Length: 345
Ligand code: 5AD
Ligand code: FES
Image 1 (cartoon, rainbow, N blue to C red):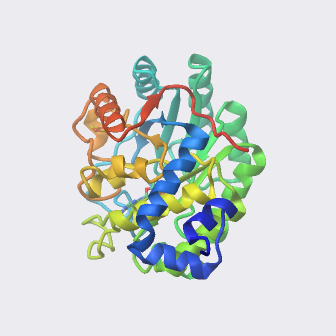
Image 2: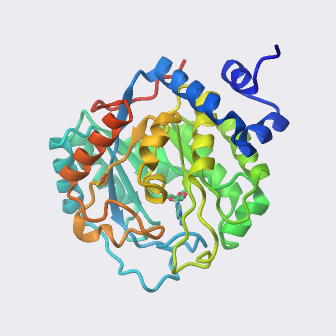
């Protein structure tokens, strides 16, 4: 009997386009696909699930991405930014709760100049020397990335959003380009960051062809982390009338990513938990091995809404941690509180 395409993907970590189309477009392979993804994840990481404490420190953004709720033209969002001291106290609370990785995420906020970001990173690095500092603050010149690295940042999340030029132009205004996005990712890699790329599943105008382009780009980049989640429309954006991405396709992609990149750090995202009450648990069972609970102060959480119906808005950090711990256990995995570095090889 010829080997199944799932087994072929598991063994060779790649497939020709035609087989990827089949895998992504048909539910027929799902059971075998999810089982193989879970087996590969256990080979590399056992039942460990890594925690990343997410601090959403500013919702000011100079960009105008058509899908995003905090785009600059959305005049309905009350804007906020946490101060240096606010951010340190979030991290302190997180540290007490056991977090050893902090992700500072924000819009592209001109107030947070390189000097301010560097001061923040250096301060966090000095106070929590055993923690990994991750930045997710968008597109910058290489020199800025280098300065953040020199200040102590070691990881950077920047989803490529879509690896197709034509699709990129449908999701973003003309001032943003896929070429610059990719330049940023390669610069970050060159500097020595652990890099996270990724994309939305079911974004407007996306077809299987675009998803395959995403997988091919990731094969080229070989990132340490890959963030994916369903597109979810936001009522105050140009994409308000587009349908959301689905649970089924997101899970299928998580599993394919685990088989293509056995070592990768793959979050089961808040967006997945938003489209289905057990979305994050199902994501873990399909190969994901990271969760990112919210450490932002409750008072600002509702203002950091990239999409509608976002979950975890009302929960204290401690409750979020407890809630996720139960969810991870119910899916059959175990939260570990170390830095959760990538295990290549
Ligand atoms: N639905 C789902 N994900 C979104 N993001 C932004 N807007 C949305 C949306 N409407 C994702 C983007 C971005 C990440 C921080 O959040 O992929 O890179
Ligand atoms: Fe935040 Fe459940 S993970 S409340």
